Image 1 (cartoon, rainbow, N blue to C red):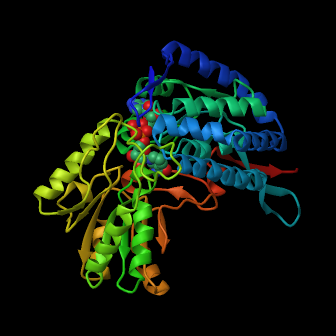
Image 2 (cartoon, rainbow, N blue to C red; image 1 turned 180 degrees about the vertical axis):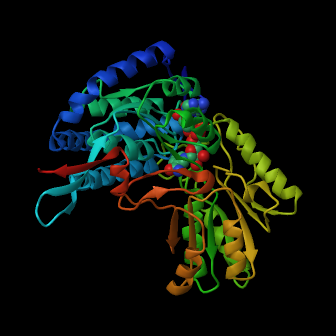
Image 3 (cartoon, rainbow, N blue to C red; image 1 turned 30 degrees about the vertical axis):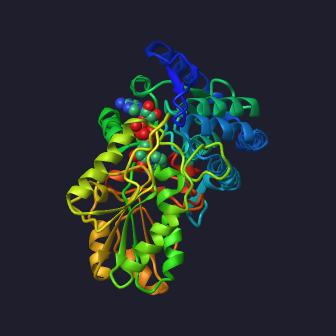
Length: 456
Ligand code: NAD
């Protein structure tokens, strides 16, 4: 398989993908190695993961360069992702022991009967990952999964293969046994072969389409299946905000990572009292975003990682224009080598348009005016997805009462496109099922065992 730089179209390297036979062999190695890893004291496992963190910091320049070369992410944003990874590992290092400790939940006054909850590792898990934040979405799974005593078969996206191989190398150098964390290399076909193995859990990050196929294939096997899927994340800007500041923050939320984040802002509703001023400030902000060589420190908009996405973006723009939207900025493929799309702002959009319904996953945004808070809430909830949603307002009470009525796994007041290791990351509807991060995101890699203990 060819690994290509999406910014230049150049082939970086050619690799041999795993096939059904090699995937099976990897599964068998992981199965054989897992009990010993589970029996390793949790403190020792955490010490190894601490070493992994140190290595990721030491080798940051090289890791950031590889990430930028294979996914087209601006180099500063690659470094930000690696810095974010260390913050997440710190959270897992601090919280794992407490999260995995046995809990005594009952003891009778005579001391004869006791009830406890234990947390046991699932066993061998498959982690099938996405390319847009490979250190984040991968790390949210393999760090706590390993900490909890599981063996991990990690399939990076075919668009982030080199990063996946770096991750395996760092973990092994840190001391995770070679058979406890194994990279499985390839595309969806390899992913399918991985899912045919009798794993004990599947942790997937990717699109709704693939997630639905995976759910269908694991459903009859009664194994834990977590699906972190796409979003069509809305922001509502109330009429009481500092318009310029809100426009700057929302534009960053929409265009950071070239709009290729699961929690990118994908729809913006603006109170009609400030709509015109907001649109003007928003367009001015986006005009300041520099598109170009992702290795350049000043670049903010990088390449579109997957070529076929260019056609999706073109379709969203053409459909919106046909149905009456105004194209204020961009709207076109940028000619040249590699995959590039100009930062695009559409105003006067509505929910008949693809750009307000389907995940765009690129540097494109629709701005819609709304008459009041109720109308904004109706529109925010008028979606198949439910990953994140946000409100910008000077009034905390107003924002909270709106966010209570919004159906999403994560809600934001005066911020957006933000993930915290301390909070659970989950979606509703087509945004998925299950969660990562927070202490729940440690326990999710275990199964609770109920202990009923009578001493005589
Ligand atoms: P994708 O669904 O195309 O691929 C994801 C992974 O699944 C890849 O590793 C791919 O090789 C594998 N795969 C493809 N077909 C498969 C099959 N039939 N069986 C098993 N594995 C298969 O998604 P992507 O393009 O890598 O990622 C983008 C999507 O991920 C967007 O929708 C984005 O919103 C979503 N995402 C969600 C989160 C979240 O936390 N909710 C985070 C990042 C990305």
